Image (tube, rainbow, N blue to C red):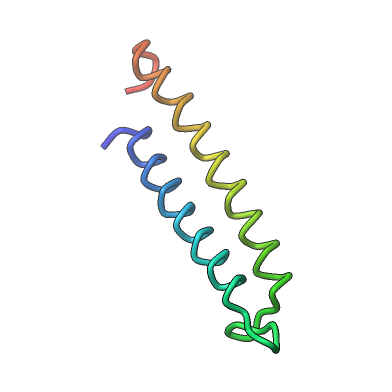
Length: 73
């Protein structure tokens, strides 16, 4: 399997994890706790996970361009 395909799958999975943490942050009730995590903690985690997904997607684009040129197999 090509590196770009693997990176794309990783970025999609990480993006879904970010969506999950964002949903958990929005459903935090009166106590602002979900599974022992505070709402602010989940919001910060979702921001960081989204940034990681964006960074991996940029790496995917870079590897796709290199594969088209034939520099990476």
